[in-house]
Image (cartoon, rainbow, N blue to C red; front, side):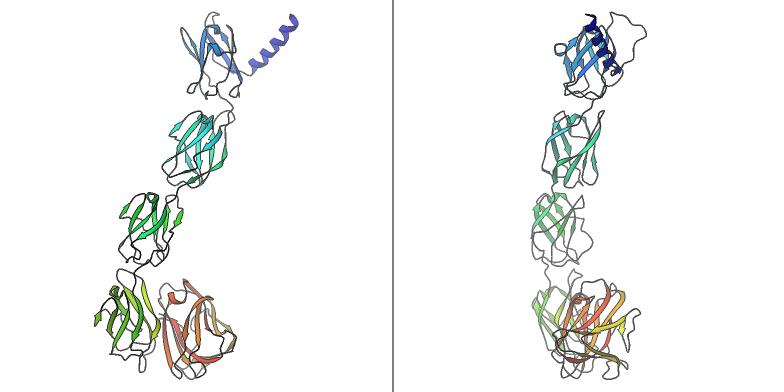
Length: 513
């Protein structure tokens, strides 16, 4: 008998050393129900918990913090006047423990904490911002924080229970796994294996399409109530003020600078989606113009489509023409002013900052006035600080004395056959194109270069082709910058032979306006 008592006392001693101590009343009475300690600390759900005290045989139930976390007397593992053992219920949470008796409750003065790791079995696969994600599993009542991608933290939950946690998706949430933070003696966090896909708006079609600038366009799609910004092609600033908005339709006014292309929708997260189709803009188009060449003071007839949208006709070297001899949707007639120079015909558009240019040069009869150039790159010599001359595929003379368009010098270029060369290649500068709209150059074709093509290339890509001629005279060209390249800073210019042919030309008056 003595041999059995010694091991039992040893086990009880170890157990008591691991218990959570409770404050005691100053006067102890053997017949009074009193909790002295309980534990062990760091227990897990399902572990055996020991309560030590006096009068514990009068305890009818032990209530843990947490919903449905009460263990009735009948479910104790053991009970005596000094000791109760039971299994920690799954619903138990961190907090005070209450011993229920027929004469009143005894509440522990220290809190029980448990070692616990929430287990997740399923997560809602996709949800819109503002709607709910449901997480199911076990011990979810111990979760203190759910973090969506890009540190979108949620600490206030729609609902929380042992096996289910419902979380509202933040307005700026993004797709990705969740980070679950939990409390307990082994508190920590982990990332879910499953990904929550956050719904984004989608644009499917436009009504009308094409549409005029400054008119309303209806974007048809899904989840459009999530849109915070709309971006149109060629317009840097987002449209943030909407005519109307719901889940399937978004109505916005088309900005003045919009061009044909995709429309981008941006959600509160900053993520963007691109429309399935292009939005087209109703713009005027030039099909033909006559006569060409035209005399200053004579009428010029421009034929095309949507010409009723034209607010002005811009010819080279003269102010914009806003008074028309006649104007219909298919034809405009204007009087050509004195002082006009060779160049493209440019049309300004109603309610728009977009312009439309003719595909070919309008030539002016007689002696054209000198081109108007705000920033010269060549005028008798290279004139812009920073340019470094180079080139290939032929020879050049940048101090040629005849023929000359303006001043006393021009550039003589003799292209080598088969080289697609650019003997004049200016590089090394960095010129902002923001103040300018037009590139200007004067070309003189000879008998062996008439009909050949040269290409004006900015920064080594793209370019605008010019067909040379007629032979024996200077032709001035005014080319919209947008026709050459979409660059914003000019670092390099080529005057490149575009067909691999040999030919002699002269170049003068290179610059921007």
